Amino acid sequence: MDDHPDIAIIGGGIVGITSALELRRRGHRVVLLDRGQPGRETSYGNTGVLSDASIVIVNNPGLLKQLPKLVRNTGLKLRYSPAFVLKRLFWVLRFLSYCTRRHFEHAAAALRAIQVLSLGIHKALIAEAGVDHLLRHTGWLKVFRSQESFRAYDMERGVLEKTGVRHTVFSADQLAQIEPGLARVFVAGVLMEDTCSVSSPAALCDAYVALFVAAGGEVRQAAVTGLERTPDNKWRVILDQAPPIEANSVVLAAGPWSAEIAAWLGYKIPMAWERGYHVHLEPGEGPALTRAVHDIDRGYVMSPQLQGVRVTSGSELTDRDAPPNYAQINEVAAMARDVAGLGEAVENTPWMGRRPTLVDSLPMIGKAPRHDDLWFNFGHHHTGLSMSAGSARIIADLIDGKAPPIDATPFRPNRFRL
Ligand SMILES: Cc1cc2nc3c(=O)[nH]c(=O)nc-3n(C[C@H](O)[C@H](O)[C@H](O)COP(=O)(O)OP(=O)(O)OC[C@H]3O[C@@H](n4cnc5c(N)ncnc54)[C@H](O)[C@@H]3O)c2cc1C
Image 1 (cartoon, rainbow, N blue to C red):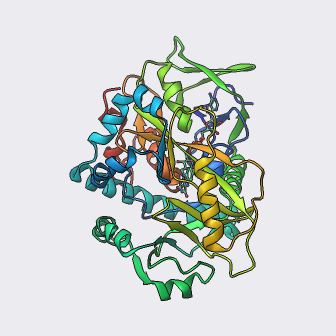
Image 2: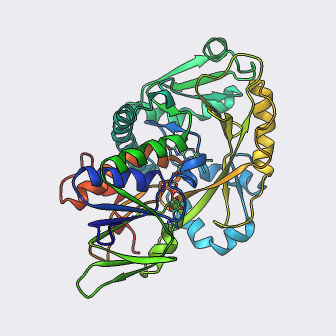
């Protein structure tokens, strides 16, 4: 047990795990702290897409046009708690203020760079961890129910072309050939050719934790309850029911809980939570899905997983810890069942997770503005699995005083007044 590590990482989701692994491999003595088993919160229940192409942010210019429809609050892509929106009105207005063409293009370029970097690292780590059986190279398919919705996708296609995302458009007949398990309700599809996916994000987390431990890293199961500076300029990390740790540096990578922890030191992190749900459905009798499929018009994704076909819902904007509301996932699970001929639900209760979203829909990766040796790595919203390995490379380079392999300035914490 190392109570004086070089670096303590708070949060053992995929972002904390990959950061721990990268830093340990560079020779730092690293302790990864999680209040539970690593990889069992948001990083457990996602769709498993390792994307190089999820670069169109939710608060894009098109969102403003959809606002009149969103007021009804019955859509499947986004539901919200009116009470939360009122309580966090300033956050919501700030989020909407980023719906500009300029920010859209800035965010797309930044996300594309980090996702490409990340995907390459993930592939190498997956091979090294010996879990190639989890990885699929079959791309990520978006399907459209009408020509109108396909035309509305033009803005995104323009960005894909501009940023060099390899993609192919399929007609209804071609869709029937590449995914024969889908009902013929879709008029077109777009396949992101280079995107990969995994059949168990939790197993991926476990495999990376095993690499970290094999490299000499330590995982400690304990809840962090406080953070203090010591007189000799170290960080004292206070733990629930365990003695504190004194570390030279701290990386805060606690995903949806990061804003709360940063607030202990006076930071006001502009974070909200786009919650999401999943259920697993038994595969049906017909041809099995071979890749993650996104029903664009209904805002859900079907992804073949070890536990069954995982159906994940769109976003629910509400308090991080509000009681779950299963209406959205129940509706889309019924649609997925019809569209892919799927069977019964595997579990009795859907899973719920929280996408940690910052107002500009970019993660925060870099030095904490007002404290030395404190590093932020959180806010990875819809694509934290995809971006984690690249974020880890960036944070490790910044800690080591090296230039990151891509421009990390779009992610710097001091882009906000915190
Ligand atoms: C429905 C859904 C589908 C998604 N699909 C995809 C996808 O296909 N591809 C993709 O790239 N991304 C996807 N995402 C997003 C992705 O899952 C997240 O961005 C990512 O998991 C965030 O990882 P994290 O490590 O930051 O947070 P988490 O995984 O939530 O980890 C944070 C960790 O911090 C720990 N922690 C919190 N507080 C403390 C404390 N006080 N002390 C100690 N430990 C603490 C928690 O226990 C937790 O393990 C999806 C998300 C959802 C909800």
